[in-house]
Length: 377
Image (cartoon, rainbow, N blue to C red; front, side, top):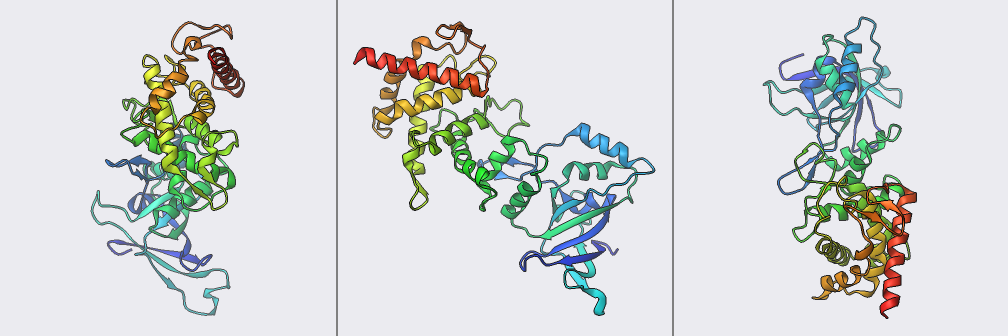
């Protein structure tokens, strides 16, 4: 191995012409020299960067303890996204290829200085890679599959695909989905638009949810002030988008596949701004102190939105006041932070974020709203 380059015997497999795939081995100490982990986070402008979940220290320590034993067997390989600067030289002779794979030597650039950017990214096996960097058995050989691309979208797509056996955290998947251009599965595709809308609500200066939504990229910051689980909003918005009875459903043109996202944005901001103004004492608190910020409250108020917003022009100057007028009809029965849900005979925090309790509270609020409207009409 010359300075600045790691050379390894490899097999080249061409599954697609534009993305070469190589199978090779690295020593444990080599992994940390050439590959880094793309942690999921956001830059100063709110743009999503990376895709990997945080380190699980206990899991990493368990792997290190095993690797440090004499009889370690470690067939679980790593998947790397390699830079286009790698170079492959095919072996000579008729036996170099069997029609499926070609044998040869792979050259991977390696930074010569500590702290310099590493050329490859770990797509799968980050906990294993961290353990390999810490094991005393630095020469331990590790199987690697590396595909050549510097396209972040492709890296994210492969990351989601290879993590289907052991499910990824739901909030990590939903945050990544808007950044993956291809369809992973019908189920995941249905969550892409709601997740993108949740991103908007968390960053839009006019949104009442700005900075309050807890996403995978912000989970590491315990002081961020984010109190709402993103999955609850994703589900609430998705339900309204995909149900013919949902107020957001008409914003989708099923004939040509387009969606009026500007109209949806206006409706969501209008409705939830009215909710915040009507219940200021319950807004922005941790879910342990406010059932409005709890997944239960978000889902129930999302279903109430489908009833209220069908008769309101969200773009009208008086829209927020109009929504507050409608919400006043249910305000007397709401017990977000204290007291008892009188019609349900349950303490304010006695209901949980499960399908049964969500349906119970949703039906209770909708029934109270319809009764109040009938009595004043």
